[in-house]
Image: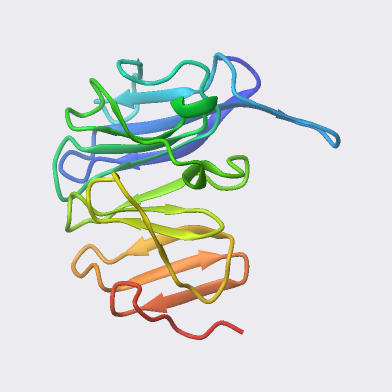
Length: 193
C-alpha cells in the first residue's frame, strides 16, 4: 500500500474469528481539499487472524474510495460492502462466498452520499437479508439490499449501530446528537435532547 492508505473498517466472521475483512481507504485531507480513492483503497481478507492478508477484487469496481464492510452472523460467507466509486459503479455490494466474488446489488446515491463522512454498514445478526446503512438518513433493507427504506430516528447524521446478537429488536444508534435506544427494531426510539 502507500502512506496515504489506512484501515477504515474491520469486520469479523462470527463463525470463524480467524477470518477478518478490512476496508482500506487511500485518501488525503488538507484544509482546502479531500482526495478520496486511489490504488490503496480496497477490501482485504485474512484467514489466519490477521497474520497475512489478500486483496479481494473479483466483481468489485475499479477506482474505489471509502468503503464500509460487514460480515453476516446469520449466513456464513455473506459479506456486505458499501463502496464509494464513480457513477453507477459505487453502492452496495454483497459476497456470498466469503469475499471470493462480489456482485453489486444497489447503486442508489443515497447509500453513499457524503462518503467521506459516512460509509458505515451493519448486518442484522439474525436475518441474512436485513442490512443497515448509516448516513444522514438511517437506511434499512429487508430484501438483501435491493431496496431501502428510511427509519425515523430522533437525530440525523447516523454513524454507528449496535444490534443485539440475541434479539434484533434491541438496538443502539449513535449519531451526531449522541445515542438513542430501540426495543422494537427501530419502530420507536428513546428520546434524545
